[in-house]
Length: 335
Image (cartoon, rainbow, N blue to C red; front, side):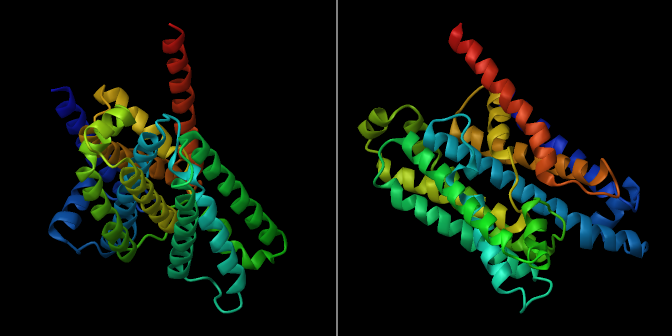
C-alpha cells in the first residue's frame, strides 16, 4: 500500500512538474492551450506550438530521461560500494568527459567555430567511457571496495588537473564551449538528443531490472550471495559498466550535474522504507525525473531571463539533504 502511494505520488508530481515547466517561460502559455497543442497537435497558435514542440518539450523529456538515469546510476554505485554517500561521478567519469572535451575543443577550435553540439556530445561520451575503462582495469585487481572508490576519486583529480593545465594555455575563444558544457544544462535539447539518450538509457534500465534479484542477494553480503551461486565478479562488472554508461550519457548530453545521484536514492529509501532493488530501481528513476524537471524549472525561472547553472540548483537542494542524512545516520548509530 505504501509503495503504491509513493509511486502514484511520483507520477502525479511528474505530471504537475511537466505542465508547470511547459507553461513557464518568456512566452506564457495557458494550460488549455498546452493540452490542445500536446494532445491534439493544435497549431492555430503558431508561436506557442513552436515553443512547446521545438524548445520546451524536448528539454523536459531530456531532463526526465537524464534525471532518472543519474539517480539510478547513484543507486547502482551505492549498491556496488555499499556506501550510502557514493555518487556516480566518484569514478572520475565526469572529469574524464571534461578532459577529453577540452582536448577536442582546443584541437578543433580552428576547424569548428562554434563547436557543433554533436561533437560536444560524442567527445564527452568518449571521455566518460575512457575513464570508465580505466576504472574497470582496476576492478579485477582491487578486492577492497573502499580502495576502488579512492582510485576513482584520484582518477577524477588527475583528469581535472590535466583539464586545468589545458585551459591555462588555451585562448578564451577556444574554451567557450567547454565552459558552457561544464555548467550543466538541458538548454539546446532537441528531439534527436532525446532519441539518442533514450536508445542508451532504456535498454540499460531493462538490464538493471533483470539484475534486481542478484543485487538483493549482493546487498545481504558476499558470503550469502556466493552461497546462492552468484558470480560476484560478473555482477560487480555489470554494476560498474551500467553505472558508467548511464553517467556517461548524462555527461554527454547535459554536462556534469551534482548531487542528484547521491541525494535522490536516499529520498527514495526514506519514502519507501525499503532498499529492495525491485522497488528502488523504478522509484529512483521516477524521483530523479521529478527532481531534475523541478530543478531545471528553478534554474530557468528563479532569475529569469538569466538562467542558472543546473548544478547550482541541484547542489543547493541536494547538499542539505545529504548533510541531513549523514547527521541522522550518525545519531542512529550513536543511539
